[in-house]
Image 1 (cartoon, rainbow, N blue to C red):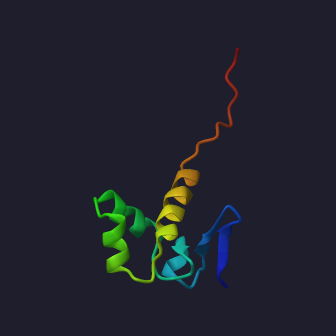
Image 2 (cartoon, helix red, strand yellow):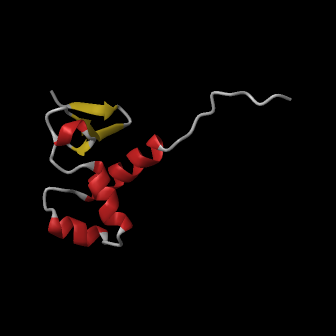
Length: 81
């Protein structure tokens, strides 16, 4: 029952049977959160790809793009003039 999180992020998938429904990379058991933590810890792209051969460079960029989109805040309140 794997589904893409959105058309904008086809490499990021959601499946309630994989990693408790967390967003993962291409239906693999690599949660987006873990990939972001590797990058935030200072691991280089080359180190991550060497440690996790199922991942591709585009997957790392897809995780970053997905996180950036999830952090966009849209105000539901209109400021009074």
